[in-house]
Image (cartoon, rainbow, N blue to C red):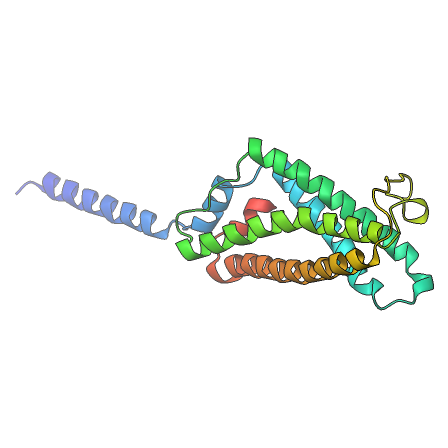
Length: 211
Protein backbone atom coordinates (compact mmCIF):
# COMPACT_ATOMS: atom_id res chain seq x y z
CA UNK A 1 0.00 0.00 0.00
CA UNK A 2 1.34 3.49 -0.81
CA UNK A 3 2.02 5.62 2.26
CA UNK A 4 0.75 8.91 0.75
CA UNK A 5 -3.05 8.33 1.26
CA UNK A 6 -2.49 7.30 4.89
CA UNK A 7 -0.37 10.37 5.54
CA UNK A 8 -2.99 12.63 3.91
CA UNK A 9 -5.77 11.07 6.02
CA UNK A 10 -3.74 11.50 9.23
CA UNK A 11 -2.98 15.12 8.32
CA UNK A 12 -6.64 15.87 7.58
CA UNK A 13 -7.71 14.16 10.82
CA UNK A 14 -5.19 16.17 12.87
CA UNK A 15 -6.32 19.40 11.18
CA UNK A 16 -9.93 18.53 11.95
CA UNK A 17 -9.14 17.89 15.62
CA UNK A 18 -7.18 21.17 15.81
CA UNK A 19 -10.05 23.12 14.23
CA UNK A 20 -12.54 21.51 16.62
CA UNK A 21 -10.39 22.41 19.61
CA UNK A 22 -10.09 25.99 18.36
CA UNK A 23 -13.89 26.38 18.12
CA UNK A 24 -14.49 24.87 21.54
CA UNK A 25 -11.92 26.97 23.34
CA UNK A 26 -13.07 30.34 21.94
CA UNK A 27 -14.52 32.51 24.76
CA UNK A 28 -18.24 33.12 24.73
CA UNK A 29 -19.16 36.71 25.63
CA UNK A 30 -22.89 36.93 25.05
CA UNK A 31 -23.31 39.65 27.66
CA UNK A 32 -20.58 41.93 26.34
CA UNK A 33 -21.72 41.55 22.75
CA UNK A 34 -25.34 42.19 23.66
CA UNK A 35 -24.42 45.21 25.76
CA UNK A 36 -22.33 46.76 22.98
CA UNK A 37 -24.89 45.87 20.31
CA UNK A 38 -27.84 47.51 22.09
CA UNK A 39 -26.04 50.35 23.89
CA UNK A 40 -27.65 53.74 24.47
CA UNK A 41 -26.21 56.71 22.63
CA UNK A 42 -24.13 59.46 24.28
CA UNK A 43 -27.12 61.81 24.55
CA UNK A 44 -29.24 59.27 26.41
CA UNK A 45 -26.35 58.51 28.76
CA UNK A 46 -25.86 62.20 29.57
CA UNK A 47 -29.57 62.64 30.32
CA UNK A 48 -29.56 59.51 32.51
CA UNK A 49 -26.58 60.43 34.66
CA UNK A 50 -27.57 64.11 34.99
CA UNK A 51 -30.97 62.92 36.23
CA UNK A 52 -29.32 60.51 38.67
CA UNK A 53 -27.14 63.33 40.05
CA UNK A 54 -30.12 65.66 40.50
CA UNK A 55 -32.16 62.95 42.24
CA UNK A 56 -29.25 62.27 44.59
CA UNK A 57 -29.39 65.95 45.52
CA UNK A 58 -33.14 66.53 45.68
CA UNK A 59 -34.36 63.36 47.38
CA UNK A 60 -32.04 63.20 50.44
CA UNK A 61 -32.45 66.95 51.05
CA UNK A 62 -36.21 66.56 50.80
CA UNK A 63 -36.22 63.82 53.43
CA UNK A 64 -33.90 65.82 55.72
CA UNK A 65 -36.00 69.00 55.63
CA UNK A 66 -38.86 67.53 57.66
CA UNK A 67 -36.49 66.82 60.57
CA UNK A 68 -35.03 70.33 60.76
CA UNK A 69 -36.11 73.28 62.85
CA UNK A 70 -37.95 75.97 60.91
CA UNK A 71 -35.17 78.55 61.20
CA UNK A 72 -32.71 76.13 59.53
CA UNK A 73 -34.91 74.95 56.66
CA UNK A 74 -34.61 77.78 54.13
CA UNK A 75 -31.21 76.86 52.57
CA UNK A 76 -32.37 73.24 52.25
CA UNK A 77 -35.62 74.34 50.62
CA UNK A 78 -33.62 76.44 48.16
CA UNK A 79 -31.46 73.45 47.13
CA UNK A 80 -34.38 71.01 47.04
CA UNK A 81 -36.66 73.24 45.00
CA UNK A 82 -33.99 74.28 42.49
CA UNK A 83 -33.01 70.64 41.99
CA UNK A 84 -36.69 69.73 41.53
CA UNK A 85 -37.29 72.38 38.87
CA UNK A 86 -34.12 71.29 37.08
CA UNK A 87 -35.28 67.65 37.17
CA UNK A 88 -38.55 68.75 35.58
CA UNK A 89 -36.76 70.65 32.78
CA UNK A 90 -34.31 67.80 32.16
CA UNK A 91 -37.17 65.26 32.10
CA UNK A 92 -39.02 67.28 29.43
CA UNK A 93 -35.86 67.60 27.35
CA UNK A 94 -35.19 63.89 27.83
CA UNK A 95 -38.66 62.96 26.61
CA UNK A 96 -38.23 65.17 23.55
CA UNK A 97 -34.89 63.46 22.90
CA UNK A 98 -36.44 60.02 23.34
CA UNK A 99 -39.11 60.75 20.72
CA UNK A 100 -36.36 61.36 18.17
CA UNK A 101 -33.99 58.68 19.48
CA UNK A 102 -35.91 55.56 20.59
CA UNK A 103 -34.36 53.37 23.26
CA UNK A 104 -32.56 50.27 21.97
CA UNK A 105 -34.62 47.11 22.48
CA UNK A 106 -33.70 44.67 25.21
CA UNK A 107 -31.82 41.61 23.93
CA UNK A 108 -33.92 38.55 23.11
CA UNK A 109 -32.22 36.48 25.83
CA UNK A 110 -33.87 38.62 28.53
CA UNK A 111 -37.07 36.81 29.65
CA UNK A 112 -40.36 38.47 28.65
CA UNK A 113 -41.52 39.05 32.26
CA UNK A 114 -38.27 40.91 33.02
CA UNK A 115 -38.65 42.97 29.84
CA UNK A 116 -42.19 43.99 30.83
CA UNK A 117 -41.08 44.82 34.38
CA UNK A 118 -38.17 46.96 33.15
CA UNK A 119 -40.42 48.81 30.69
CA UNK A 120 -43.04 49.44 33.37
CA UNK A 121 -40.48 50.78 35.86
CA UNK A 122 -38.94 53.07 33.24
CA UNK A 123 -42.31 54.49 32.17
CA UNK A 124 -43.37 55.03 35.80
CA UNK A 125 -40.11 56.85 36.58
CA UNK A 126 -40.47 59.08 33.52
CA UNK A 127 -43.99 59.99 34.64
CA UNK A 128 -43.00 60.71 38.24
CA UNK A 129 -39.98 62.79 37.20
CA UNK A 130 -42.50 65.21 35.68
CA UNK A 131 -45.38 64.90 38.15
CA UNK A 132 -43.31 65.17 41.34
CA UNK A 133 -41.71 68.58 40.61
CA UNK A 134 -45.12 69.94 39.60
CA UNK A 135 -46.61 68.81 42.91
CA UNK A 136 -43.73 70.39 44.79
CA UNK A 137 -44.01 73.66 42.87
CA UNK A 138 -47.77 73.89 43.51
CA UNK A 139 -47.31 73.03 47.20
CA UNK A 140 -44.67 75.73 47.78
CA UNK A 141 -46.87 78.35 46.13
CA UNK A 142 -49.94 77.20 48.04
CA UNK A 143 -47.99 77.45 51.31
CA UNK A 144 -47.13 81.03 50.36
CA UNK A 145 -43.44 80.38 49.60
CA UNK A 146 -42.96 80.72 45.84
CA UNK A 147 -39.47 80.32 44.35
CA UNK A 148 -38.47 83.91 44.92
CA UNK A 149 -35.93 85.73 47.08
CA UNK A 150 -34.09 83.24 49.30
CA UNK A 151 -35.54 80.29 47.42
CA UNK A 152 -35.20 81.73 43.91
CA UNK A 153 -34.38 79.16 41.23
CA UNK A 154 -30.62 78.50 41.39
CA UNK A 155 -30.45 81.44 43.79
CA UNK A 156 -30.80 83.87 40.87
CA UNK A 157 -34.14 83.58 39.05
CA UNK A 158 -37.42 84.57 40.69
CA UNK A 159 -40.20 82.38 39.32
CA UNK A 160 -43.69 83.87 39.06
CA UNK A 161 -46.16 83.43 41.88
CA UNK A 162 -49.31 82.05 40.28
CA UNK A 163 -51.63 81.60 43.27
CA UNK A 164 -52.52 83.01 46.66
CA UNK A 165 -51.83 81.15 49.89
CA UNK A 166 -54.20 78.22 50.32
CA UNK A 167 -53.20 76.03 53.25
CA UNK A 168 -55.94 73.47 52.67
CA UNK A 169 -54.79 72.91 49.09
CA UNK A 170 -51.16 73.05 50.23
CA UNK A 171 -51.71 70.25 52.75
CA UNK A 172 -53.37 67.99 50.18
CA UNK A 173 -50.73 68.61 47.51
CA UNK A 174 -47.92 68.22 50.05
CA UNK A 175 -49.33 64.85 51.11
CA UNK A 176 -49.40 63.76 47.47
CA UNK A 177 -45.83 65.03 47.00
CA UNK A 178 -44.64 63.03 50.01
CA UNK A 179 -46.42 59.87 48.85
CA UNK A 180 -44.97 60.13 45.35
CA UNK A 181 -41.51 60.53 46.90
CA UNK A 182 -41.83 57.14 48.60
CA UNK A 183 -43.20 55.54 45.43
CA UNK A 184 -40.31 56.99 43.45
CA UNK A 185 -37.83 55.71 46.02
CA UNK A 186 -39.30 52.21 45.72
CA UNK A 187 -39.06 52.36 41.92
CA UNK A 188 -35.45 53.54 42.10
CA UNK A 189 -34.55 50.70 44.46
CA UNK A 190 -36.21 48.27 42.04
CA UNK A 191 -34.35 49.84 39.12
CA UNK A 192 -30.95 49.60 40.85
CA UNK A 193 -31.71 46.06 42.05
CA UNK A 194 -32.50 45.09 38.46
CA UNK A 195 -29.19 46.51 37.23
CA UNK A 196 -27.29 44.60 39.94
CA UNK A 197 -29.22 41.41 39.14
CA UNK A 198 -28.34 41.61 35.44
CA UNK A 199 -24.70 42.44 36.10
CA UNK A 200 -23.89 40.17 39.06
CA UNK A 201 -26.25 37.21 38.62
CA UNK A 202 -27.32 36.94 34.97
CA UNK A 203 -24.06 38.52 33.77
CA UNK A 204 -25.70 39.53 30.50
CA UNK A 205 -23.96 42.89 30.11
CA UNK A 206 -27.10 45.04 30.24
CA UNK A 207 -25.48 47.48 32.66
CA UNK A 208 -22.92 48.29 29.96
CA UNK A 209 -25.69 49.81 27.82
CA UNK A 210 -25.74 52.94 30.02
CA UNK A 211 -22.06 53.37 30.98
